[in-house]
Each structure stands twice: as structure tokens, then as C-alpha cells.
Image 1 (cartoon, one colour):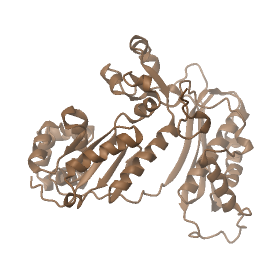
Image 2 (cartoon, rainbow, N blue to C red):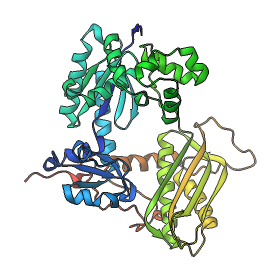
Image 3 (tube, rainbow, N blue to C red):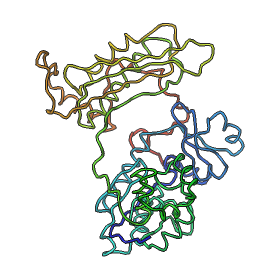
Image 4 (cartoon, one colour):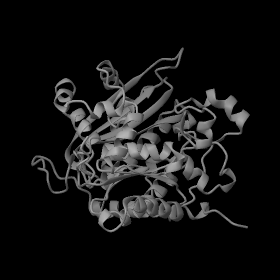
Amino acid sequence: MNGANNTAFALVDCNNFYASCEKLFRPDLKHMPVVVLSNNDGCIVARSKEAKALGVKMGMPLFQAQAAIRQHSIVCFSSNYALYADLSNRVMAILEEEAPRLEVYSIDEAFLDLTGVEYAMDLLTFGKRLKAKVDKWTGITVGVGIAPTKTLAKLANEAAKRYPATGSVVDLMNPDRQKRLLSLVDVSDVWGVGRRITERLRARGIRTALDLANANPRAIRSEFSVVLERTVQELNGVSCLNLELVRPTKQQIICSRSFGYRITEKQELREAIAKYTTRAAEKLRKEKRLCRVVNVFIRTSPHAHDEKHYRNALSVELPNPTDDTRDLLDVTEVLFCRLWRDGFRYMKGGVMLADFYEHGAYQHDFFRADGMKANSQALMSVVDQINRSGQGNIFFASQGVSPQWAMKREHLSPAYTTQWEALPKVW
């Protein structure tokens, strides 16, 4: 390992993010075990450190965890995506202020480019200051891993979580420290090394991250892939993965949910499809794209016994691409009516948009009218602004007024940061 590199990256990761968000406005739960549930309150998708210590497993169905929940007074929450997204945005805004360049990797993780920061401040000191600022300004605790490559920064971040003596900040810029940590890390814990690759590596005697770092890069490329060869280089302190400063444009947008109960009425499922269409259109406009292909799908549960099963999907290619919710609702209504069959208990439906174009970068169908509604862009912009403001909500009548088909969210916490009426009250 040469460690010769003039780059420096930090990976900042929010600790137990969903559970931490739920605890933030509930100080009474500070030391209580907390779990967050998936859509329709089906499975456990996030755990506080106290819940992890009790042996609660990720992905465990809620009904299987009931005994542990009662025994240990575990507090359950339905997924509150509005709360999590808002707090994530606050964390990322702080990181963006502190680093020259930032890559938001996921809702609770971000890579920072710290190249050159060491000339102004020791990187360990910088990491501790950054952690303290995020903790104080948002109430969300984070871990910070610093290293010359993104792969090593990932491992440094894991070490920051695993070893309390680090104070949740690990500086892995020193090659000797890199070797010591890599010798303690199983090869399966290296970023990008999946289960099948792990089995093949172990068959070659490569069991730790250090073993992989010491492997011949050319041999790894020949037997595995150029991607794993880059991982070897990254473990040796040679940066091969740059920050992705511009988020790749989505190739498709899917809006779909399992329903809170089985739907047997056509109007209820029609409202659900309209809701998903509206949400997909909002996401499309956020991407600043137009779509040309629209797909609608519905299905019953494949696991239901003693029931008739049905699943189907239909797509249509529009004569001219659009991002107007009204255009898309017209299309999905027609597709849905062709898909609907009486006598089934539907458990899921959804809408997919695909074949995206930039505004002004597509060829109109000369044999068809443009079909663009008057003031379409201005109207959709106003609708989106109002809905994002949190001060009101504009929706299309086809979505229904009070849908009964919505996800089951019996343990949903208030939208503390995005709705005035949900603001915490101090008496």
C-alpha cells in the first residue's frame, strides 16, 4: 500500500437516521428503543441503537416482533417521509456550507471533497467541528470518516460507528492506520463487494479488506471486473471514484404503493391511480423533463390463498411529450379503464413514466397538433409552488377527497417541520 494521494474525502452519515428523526421531537424517548415501519406498517426498516441492542432485526415483519415490542416497551412509528426529507435537507445544507464540493449519496449520507482543507486546518479537527455543528444545529448525530478515497472514507465511517473511543470521527489519511483498519475488516464489508463476489474472493484466500488491497489489480480485473480492480486501487489510497456533483437524470419515474386494504371497488382504485399519476408528474417536473411513455399497472396479491389472481399493465406512447398533470391524468384514466376487471381484490397499483426529453429538445409529430394546454407551464409551476410551501394543497378532483385506499399508517408521527398545525407546543 502506498497511500500516495493528494485527495481527501469525508463521508458523513446520520446515525440511525429515521429513528433519530422520530426521537428528535420526543425527548421522552431519548433512551427508549424505537423502530420505524415500512409502507402499510409491514416490516421494521429502521432501528434506534437501543432497539438494535435488544436484537430487533432489520426487515422483521411487525407481527413477528410483537412479543419483543410488548416485553421491552419498544415504540413503533410509521414511516414519516416528509419529516425525514426535511431534516435531511437541513443536514445537507450545513455540509454544503462547510465543504468545497458535496455529493449527496443518499437521504442520510454525503461525500465531501476536503482536498486542500488540510492547509487551513487539521482534518481530524475539521471532522470534529463538522460533527459538532450538525449535531447542534439539527439535533441529528452523525459519524464522519475521512480518507484519501471514497472507499476508504466508507470504511472510516464504519469504524467511527463501531468504536466509541473515536468520538464518531475517524481520520484514515495515514497509510499505517489504513492497514490496521483493513486487517480488521471482513472483505464482505468493503463498499461494492457483494455476497457472490465475497464467496469467490474467499475461495482465493482473500478474507479481509487488507487481503483485497494486497491482491494484484490486473489479476483481479482479469478474474472479476474493472470495477473491483478500482476498489483494490481505492483501498490502496489511489482515488478512482470522483464526486458525482450532478445527480444523474432518472430514466424512469415510478409511483406505486401497496394499499392499506384490498380494493374491490373501481372508483377507489381509479382514485389511487390518479393520485400516483399526480405524484409522478410532480417528480417529472422536478427533473425538468417531459415524458412520452406512460404505463399503468394493477395487481392482486400473489400470496393470497383461495383467491383469484390478476395482474396486468398497459403502456401508451404519447404523440408529443408532456409534463402537464392534466394530460397524464387523461391518459392513465383510459389505460386504467382498460385494465380494470370486476371480481378481484386488488392490493397494488402504480404509474410509470419513461422516455424523457428536455424542454425544446424533441421533434414534434407534424401530423398531430401539439396539444399543449394554454399556460400549461405557468399553471403547473404555481401548483407545485403551493404544494411545496406547506401552506396549502392543490389537488385534482379525480384523486378523491378522503381516500380510504391510502397506506395503513397507524403509528404516524406529526409533520413537525412542514406543517404549522403540527408544530410542537410547549405549555
